[in-house]
Length: 304
Image 1: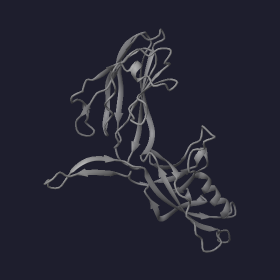
Image 2: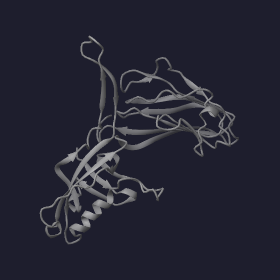
Image 3: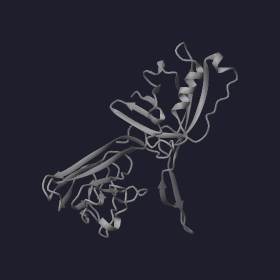
C-alpha cells in the first residue's frame, strides 16, 4: 500500500506533497527517520490497586493531545531559492487560529492511500528547530524540524450524514446509523420544527455485529416542540459541547429536552442499523432530521 502525505497550509494555504508519488517536484519533503507521532493516536491508561490485590485494575483510558515531530529536507533550485522554499514551509503552520479572521483554519496533514483520505489538523507548539552549520542559501539546502500538536488526536475522514424527512405534518420511519471506525462516535442530530421522538439506544454485541440491546436497547427521547423561535434544534453527544442548542446557539436543554438527556454514543465497528424516528406537529411543508456521523480513526490507515 502506497501512502501520499501532503501538507495543507493554514488558512487555505498551499497543498504540497511531502512524501510519496509526486514529492520529487516538492521544495520540501519529509526526512527519513525524522517523523514521530504520525501513526497511532496517543493513549493514557489509568490503573488502581486495592490493598492486598494481586496486580491491579484498569480505571480508565483517555486520549490526550497528539504531539508530532516532522523533519523536512528543504531544497532550493532554479525555480525557488532556499529562503523562498523555507518561507513557504513556515507559512503553512501557525501557533493558533488568527483572532482577527473568523474564517481561519489550522494546517492539516493529509494522507491518501488507495480510496482512503484522512486528515489531521495541527498547530505549532514550539518554534522550528534549525541550526545549519553552513549558509543554507549558499548550499541550497537545510533540514528543519517542526514540533506540532493535534488538539483533536484522531485522523478524520469525510463525515457521513443520513436523514429522514416527511412532507406532511407528522410521520414516522427509520434513519441509518453506523460507525465503521475504531473510535467511539459522538453523533449530532439536527432537527427542524416539530415535536420529535428521537432514538437513544444502548448497544450490545461483538465488533461489526453490534445491535441495539442491553438495558436501553429500545430507548427513545420524546422531546418538547421545536418551534419557529428555536429555528432548528442541534443535539450534540460530544461532552465538550452543550447538548441541545437552538439555531442561534442558545442552550435549550431545559426548554426542549423535557427532563431527558441523551446517554448513548455509537461504539466502534457498528454496522449500518435502522433506528426508529417520528415527528408530529410539523409545519405544512414537513420536517427533516439529519444525523451527522463523524469518522475518526486512530491511525491514517486501517481501523475498519
